[in-house]
Length: 286
Image (cartoon, rainbow, N blue to C red):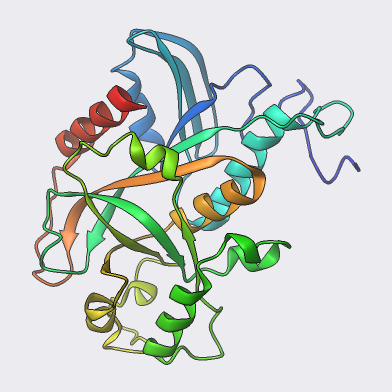
């Protein structure tokens, strides 16, 4: 493997994350905001590792005797591309030689995020467990061998329903880990389909000074259903988390706190207590 394929720093750490093998647990909580890492680390009994570079901040420690890593991704599926690939490299590639392990390690990722509900029955203050992620971002199309991973029926029906233009990347749909979902079967989480958008404004139907390609897209998404499942919310990362994790043999799940509702217009400014409550629910079951 060429050095430009998997870049490492002078101290032997992986390029963007500045982490070394052994710095992470096999159970990893992903958050978007770097400031949220320290906020969640306050729940730990003991901290073993603290490192950061750019938007990637990492804390590995112990919660009630169990080791967990909390790491921030920043915003967007492009950052998730870096995050998941480099975390995988830490456990499955020799960073010095570039040799890929014959016995791959499987990691478990749970993303805790904030989100906007697009249905009235997904109110502000609720939690959404994303059983399926629909990616409007196109990231997974750059990788080979993903066809077996996708829910093509869902993606095709949604694209047809939305009259998806050829100028945009074709939607893809990926399911969460069944094993991780079972950990939270007793929690009162709303379950549904989550759309990962490649931006915050027009890609999520917001209009400031620029219009959108379809000013009815949020209404259409809110009215779509398949196999008894509806599209519940927007966010900006989980399609890549689910897609890359599936391809690399990892497990992934996302649970988001709904801090805004696009139908009612309600928004929660002080949502930190909601995130803390959600983090406790995740760590207690993870």
